[in-house]
Length: 309
Length: 246
Image (cartoon, rainbow over the protein chains, first blue to last red):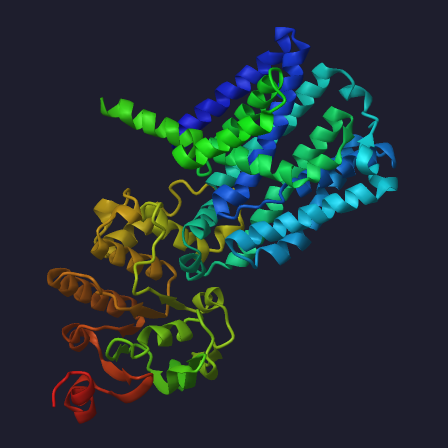
């Protein structure tokens, strides 16, 4: 898909999301909130995986930092939301800078392993540092500002933040910076011989990806009224990677589709069986073997076939 | 001082000496060829000059600036662009986008996340593509272009960096005779027109004598002769080693 069909898709999606709260189903509204947050999370990884071509297996670390920091600033320091959330994002940015500098020196699998190592380190800290994080039990009970108390209002808040974030990532993907990222993914050596400092650009992508993951984490903490150590566990990072692969790495809407479908499947299948991981394994198998370009790749193929007839 | 100076450059890979105490100078405005049989170390020498690998000892200076500790992207910024022997483009980007991203980097727009890239620098990109005779292929993906056209695209990408010196590693490798001939005249015209100093390696002697103003002969990692084309052609060692005549 080129820009136009993707923009039309995003427009339709936005309109559909505007209608959801008026359908009168609280279940649907809450489901949509989670789908939006997880879509943003997948979208954030795609800045790194799709644009620059670096797959992080520790991306959940920044989701968790965003969430825990928001929880802590709101509840312990009782900062207003307008301060707590930006502060949480700044904290995640600082972590991303330090971790990123160490990680982007490495290539492919070594990069993936080091990001994984950092996220598990963070998970360990979260489990042990009970006074701040609540340890095993998680950080329970976040005091939300009054205007976010109703599910309806929280829905609008999430929709606004996720839409703005998505628009920013869209602009980024079409920008001169985005095009430089793609050049690095396509051919690192050639990019450096254009005068591009590849490591520096990879670090920028790493930090940008972390910022949007932290925003998603911040929203998730507020939605759940708490943050839990699983959010930093490697399975959460794995989930994000699978979402991106399922949707399609080299497209903008791919990760949004992938994250939405994966979550909806999880919720649905949980109603019938507790063996969701088994199903997820099969999905992953299917994607890797049959859909290397994800759902978007499938759509493209179908579209091309229809076009020929 | 010459424009580009290589002084006592040595590159060892383990115990193997790929480049052995190489010194030569490229004058401003020269079209300087490095010739030598396969395995002589031509590509290693290029990688060393352009910053892709570090010399074990020795130095490279461009216009008096020492390049030996600079990264490739820094070397490009002070006016040296290069192409590669094996085609090295952005395969999934179109020809247009290949050149465009080179201009983006040249104008330092890679840090701008809001500047829309669509259609940016259209005129300049098309001018460069037309200069290498790819005007009609601007919308095609680089990976789908024929080999010869990819080489031409690489030339356009290198030119987009607005270089003062251009390093071309086997610019006609894998081309047909007709393609080779048109490429050489193209390269010669472009460097002359833009006043670019050219340093290139080439296996095809006809190409070399067609465009080189100076030739250095590399053999087993050593420069055995540097001179005008006629001098090199007449040199006994060169004849024996490279041109294969007893």
